Image (cartoon, rainbow, N blue to C red; front, side, top):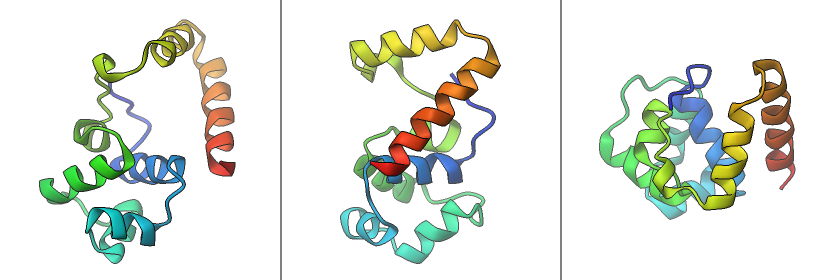
Length: 110
């Protein structure tokens, strides 16, 4: 599945925040320079090195494919989460967006 409304920048920032990590903490755990992380999250790095993407993905617990292309491997998603995704998939786009917004708001406060 490819989410065309998000970029590497937004996917990394969302995944980082979902883990409750600051950019400094992500640097500490991944070994990727904080300034480079900030540039990626601002969309100022067109093609980040694959090694950095893999290091960042490992720490925020998503796949490198998800970060770079928005591709989700459903084989790695827990059953209950997959069930929720399938239910969302059946909703009209405007309702899916409301759920995405609500989930993102919850993750931002976590």
